[in-house]
Length: 366
Image (cartoon, rainbow, N blue to C red; front, top):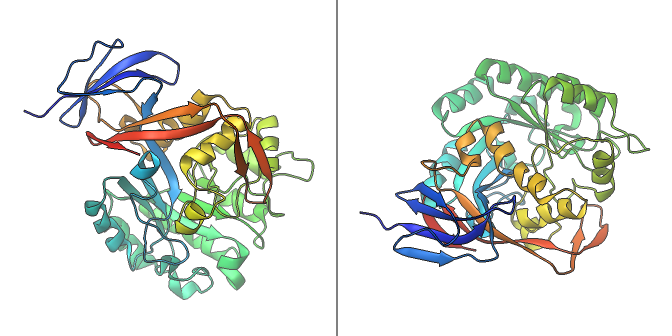
């Protein structure tokens, strides 16, 4: 028989105290505080517990430069139990990324880059010859358990003279495979007003809070009509902070006008993990606490909402019989400096600090 693991004296995000019992990779019970019994007991006094954090936008193929990193460095070591690689690999190398899951503790899924070369180059959509329909469809059919969507980076430095055509092709691939699109937005052309109307329910706009000129808000901070129309169609908004794609000013405007939150993600890779301005998912979550969102709102974006988008709702719940994927964290009341992608520095009064995870039943301290 396997040992029963007990996380004693945790708090749910709604402040409800509890003990959580884990056995054979599942949640065996949720009891009152101090009531859980088992062979391995961890006193978690002062810690919150949520279902395991999900980061919907990372880059976890370490060979790629600059956009690569080790799976567990941006996963369990950050308090994150599930990560989704956002298009590091196209059809040429997606099999290698899928195989790398066996060496990691962190759960891994991926968006398939519609360019077969993926991020071997950072202008991967500048030649339409690299957009190979047959190879993309074959890759999706081969890795249906792993690929959750298609990724198209539609900004000037990526598409160059290809314009909007890569997104038109991506839309056709989406229709053929039944998978949603994640679309990276940034500097134009193409103009944001050309891009967004091509997106449908469950498609994802990532980097929606970027501070570039080609963004989703006007000069007064009001959402553009294409954004409000997209939200009405069911298009999903994802933060995707990244090195150059999150603005405090834009995020404050979005909150003021009731836009978001769907999912908070990092666009994390080695460079912006070590040197900022991202550092970790906890750091990005802290920025949204600073902006005035409640702890429950913030944590929901990386648990229940992310799990629902993945169509894996069990990953976003803590319930008896469900998978034991959990994140333990503290909210520490001490000043912390935060920086956005524009170099705007803010002082916050508290920060979120991960302390450990239970991933597929195994307890790992951060």
